[in-house]
Length: 69
Image 1 (cartoon, rainbow, N blue to C red):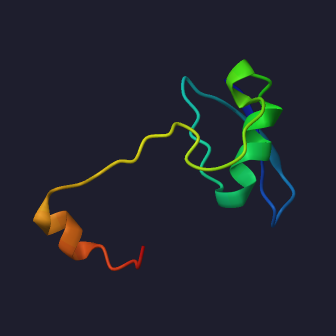
Image 2 (image 1 turned 90 degrees about the horizontal axis):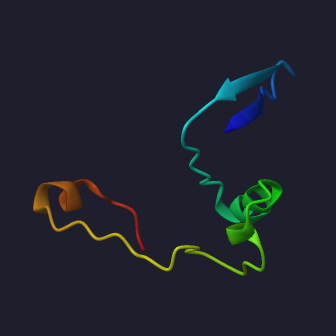
């Protein structure tokens, strides 16, 4: 992947090469994914795109998570 990244504060644009790209932009994730042009990005309508939910069963990690879901 060749990703162009723009610093919103300075306006500087940098090009980064990466083997993998994770798009986690909340409501903006689907439009970003569709800009890639890959076939899997077409006709999406919501989250999670993969249809998978990840579960943690480690009590130490769970106790540190104070977000209401």
